[in-house]
Length: 116
Image (cartoon, rainbow, N blue to C red):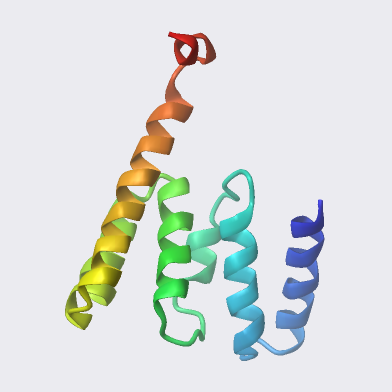
């Protein structure tokens, strides 16, 4: 899988230079785009050097919710989006939480229940 290879290359790059911010950004995106959650990816990426921006915060929310850490995703909304007072960004973050809740609920249902 290309994302797995990309993550491996990014990890090697970060082993050489852990302060290389673009690699952390790309690694966050690579984990967020993975079809299935990668255990511990959210915790591995928090507190890493990253530029502030709604895209990074939203990707971290995806990682947290996919790992079952909805509380951590909500804290990002509280700490990042609410203080910025950008109503469109705040609404997008809240919608993302709702969508991730819906996806989690659907994933927990037995396959035959999806046919009803």
